Amino acid sequence: MAFSIAAAGTGAGAGALASSSANCYSSTKLTYLSSLQFPMELRRFQIGNCGLKSNKGTSRLVPLVEAKKETFSSFEELLEKSEKPLLVDFYATWCGPCQFMVPILNEVGESMKDKIQVVKIDSEKYPALADKYKIQALPTFILFKDGEVCDRFEGALNAPTLMQRIESALEVKQ
Image (tube, rainbow, N blue to C red; front, side):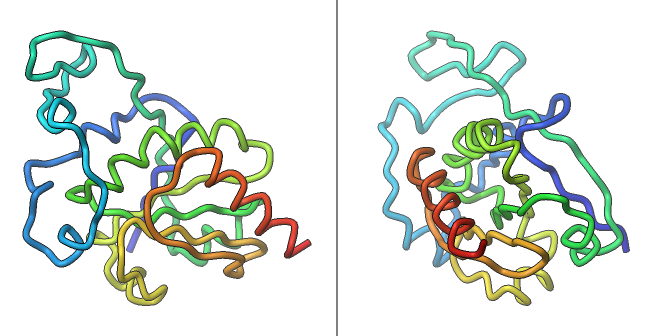
């Protein structure tokens, strides 16, 4: 079985924001637990080649997340072959806070590209992997260093907080 991931912040083109589906308001337990609220203007938008278009009819350009798709035979192979620590984002396409984290992960991946590699894994496509790491809330971030779990946290964070958390976790393990 091939294992595909999208590493945020490198390579050419994939619009991860475009994967947001109409299921965003699903009646699952995780949706109700989320405390993230978006202004009404941001809740309804259309995604196209020209950026986002709000329900008011004004267009603005929004940078799409660049991702490089790589295929590995297993997650363990990904951990073994990684030369840098991995920040793994376990997400789902219907999860609002997960979609909120897309540009933040892109920024963190670009800012810290010399220190870490950011990897996104869809927890619904790889349920065995989500079970193995006991993913119970989305988004869940796990920082791996030398193939071992270095840190773990859940929920949406802003870029400076996320970078500080990664820096402090990597300092402790060195």
